Image (cartoon, rainbow, N blue to C red; front, side, top):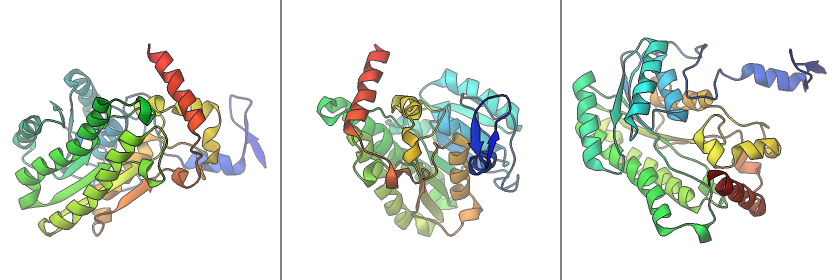
Length: 313
């Protein structure tokens, strides 16, 4: 059976209508949700503090939004303080919780030390660390500069280790806590034009397991979320997502759609909360099954890369 969507001429199947009705609320822009239906208790993270790198936009901002709606105060950290201050105002207005914006570079341990000290001074404790800061773009290995590869490794891999180590030494070692690393499925099958990010995320997956083993006795759980293509993010645009969607390339995904930021926030919420109290060293793949079926068409990806280069000139 088919039904027509209100206000447009598009007909969709009842199965598609059911899937769309089940999707959580989201907005494409870097704004807070206008409405939200809790799937967990609103007090799930009551009076906890989450430190979120890359928290001023995209998935990081939505994680802060969802966490704060579950009773959590947040620290959002990145290099762009003006952007963070704007985001913090939105987040506090939407949730009524506190949000502390801090300028920090995950590649610089001294910068992280200063930010974590400021967070502890403001809130007195840190319960959750979300390692979300990342850098990515599509580029064939032959065109990738040495410095570009190094930069992605420094942000994604070294940044994750640097921040985790500082937070562990300053708080988690003596008080326990939860770390959620934002990974990707790029290394699972060898993704074309992603040797830099795939290598960095593969290292992060290994780091997740190693730290889970070493820090478990201190009461620290370490897990990861590996998102697929997520709408409304800078990565979606930079990695050819808009063109791929127009070309209906995402129909090869078993769930036949891209994900949204709220869905990723829910994954992180689960791993960061007592809902997953006996889970550590796990990598939660949240890509609609994309890594199992999506085409790895080098020529198409090169086309996206060429178009992106022309657009950015």
